[in-house]
Length: 404
Image (cartoon, rainbow, N blue to C red; front, side, top):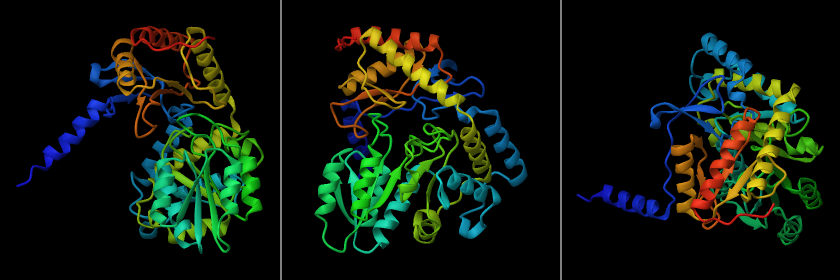
């Protein structure tokens, strides 16, 4: 009999040798303690999390937890199946209405994750719109790439955040093509922000459907947390907005928002919606509470902005390089997978600081980095401890410093 385990182990060993093997720390988040968490790999020792996508700590907000607990007690743990089988609960309907309102759209549709909402929506749009051609930003997320691939539509890549290159590629499309322009607002690895207005100008000039992924922006930007498009007054010009409930909103799930016809089209044809068990009602209720809170409160966003500025200033003072961008993401380039993992491991083992190394295939080889996401609960002491540890490790690894 063929030894399949040997085949698996050989490729895993190669991954380890490259420095790209992924290891997951066993962490236990505790209500009221975030960004601290218990690390069970070190006997329950407390560590400080610096790379969470729960950007605003809403996963620990009392209103969110209360909504989840009350709904679980009233409606049970799960949804009972797909919405085709088990129906739509009022908790799903309320959340979809809240999300449609957040983005100024007629309707919204829930999915189990942001990955699934991208995969399902792009695949059905590309597959069912006549002569569809999907024009994808060069740095789009894996979920968007998978959705485009699954659609089997023609795909063209345009240079990252480059409206002029998009214009050229749209102008070169054959007559009768249905163009779909897919891009993100905040790109999570570099932290840069798309020139949305200019991209929409190009889309409108060529009659293209605009598909905007705001997963790293919803909750974070705009007066009500509607994302970068809300902040810039552009939501009404975007055909479809895709978002997540698992990052700044602190729960789980994904969604799309658009016209009633568009949302009904995705609901009716997307296999990723039709054949997937619905979000538990408790998750939907918790997400609704989070969205409502962040529509009214700017406290969390203001605290998060202060934390980002504080970290960037401290890194500058220590000569630790970080990639400039206008977002909440602070990438610190290392450029070597082995050193990147070693820094991450040492921060955890010796300093009680948790930040995952970002390596291939998430980013290209040679651009490995640490990705920090300061939040409103990170204190000045947390920042000082982090930067002091990084400075020592920068010297130990003989990495270049930058001049402030």
